[in-house]
Structure formats: structure tokens, C-alpha cells
Amino acid sequence: MLPRNALNDSTYFGAIVGRVANRIGGAQFILNGTRYELDANEQQNMLHGGHPGFSDVVWEVTKYKKDGEHPRIMFTYHSFDGEEGFPGDLKVMVTYSLVGKYKLSVKMVAESQNKATPVNLAQHAYWNLGGHDSGDILSEKIQIFGSHITPTNDQLIPTGRIVSVKGTPYDLLEPRVIKSKIKELINGFDINYVLDGEKGKKMKRVAVVWDEKSGRSMRLTTDAPGVQFYTGNNIEDVKGKGGYVYEAYAGLCLETQGFPDSVNHPNFPSQIVNPGQVYKHCMLFMFSIDQESN
Image (cartoon, rainbow, N blue to C red):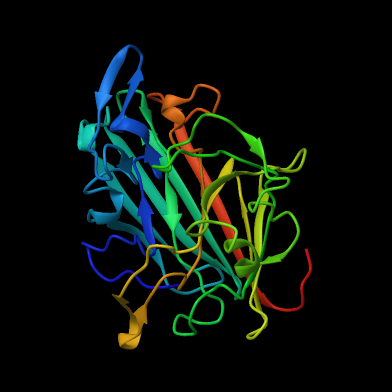
């Protein structure tokens, strides 16, 4: 995982993003008859909760267990009514846990205190299984268990359609080397996949990533409906660990999430959390050194 460098970092390396991750078109939405104007921090749109979003605020450590079978740490943040334009007070808790030697669990919980509000939290880790200083991720292989995407306009705002990946560069239903598909795109991957899921199972398979040179693999599951696959297209001259400088495609993101701009598309799964309701979002990263397998 690549490290986050500073509070003014625009790459969101390793950050929790929200109150609503990804983009909200026109930086506005209507909820219960009221129009909410948000902070437009990417052209006329909102990205990752505005500025500052949850990635640039100070979280409190409320629980910490260093030893034992499942070491963990919990971060808590109180988002105030009107922060970046969002309605209502929101209590947010994010817990990172190590499960054995090779699994990382991330659990996000948010409680609406007094008003209905959209909530869509995401973990914005960048992964390079070859090591943070090994170059780009273009030779890594990926499989994504999503047979549909939510296509976007030229500002990466969803059109509202849900379309099949069949016959498109986004078809990653079978393992593919990233560079074999990325050459068919203008810049790289930055798209929300609709996860297929399996009947009767709460946690869905999201993706498997392999690095042939190191032999490392990563599997990801979640209870969220979608995942944003981003190949670090816009990373440029970012100084990291040991002075190593990251460039485009230095890492990939698999951000499990609700669909982008859901507040403006009634056909997308709702992100609205009412007072008394609890938002929950879980993901599990599993690492191994093995051959390709599902």
C-alpha cells in the first residue's frame, strides 16, 4: 500500500473519503424537497466530500488493541450539520483489524444524529503488489467480479445508465494483464463496477490481483454494491517512502462503495441514511503468495 504524504495531498493515498465518496454532479442534490448546495472542488462537481473532506480532518483514536489474535484500531469523527453543505450531524467510526497474518478487515459505521443525509464512505488505498518502489502496476493481472458498469460523461459523472462490460475494455470478468486493456482507454481505468454478488451471501467477491514477479496476490470482498477501479492515472511527481517518486500507474485502487452520484439517480441504490438508521460498510483484503486461482 502506498503511503499518504500530507494533509494537502490530492491523491487521497490511504485515506477514508466521505461524507460521500466519489463524485456528485453539479455539487448539489435534492432531499425531502430541499436543495443542498455542496462544496465544488472539482470543476463544478464535488469529489470525495469536498474540501476538506473526511480525508483532511483530524480523527480521534477511540479504541486500540495492539496485542492478541486480532489487533485493531478504531477512528471516530463527528461531522457537523452543514459541513461541506451536507445536512445533519453524523458520527462516523472506522475500524482496521488484522485477521491472522494475511488479512486486513476494514469496517465503517455511520450514525445519522438528526437529519436524513447521504453517506458513502470509501477506503482510498493504492496497491502495488510488487512493492511501492517497484515501478508501475501495468504488468499486474486483475479480475473484477462485475459484469456491468455505470458509464460516465467527460467529467466522470455517471449518466444514470447501467451497461454490460461485454465487448468493452472494461470486461475484466476473466483475469487480464492491466496494460493489455488500458491501451484501449484514453487515460486509464476510473470507473464504477456493479458487483455481481452471489445469492445468499452478504459479502461479495470484488476482485483478485496478481503480481507475477513477486508471486503476491490480493483478494477483496465487500458488502457494498460497487467498486471504483482506478489505475492511478493522475499521479505525478509524488514523493513517497524513502524519497521514491511516484508517477502515473504507480498503484491501483479498488474502492468499494455505493454508486457515484446516487443522490441524483433514483435508479441507483440509495445512500440516504435517516435518523436512527446506521450505515455499515465492510471490506476484507486477503493476501497470499500463490498461483492464479479464484
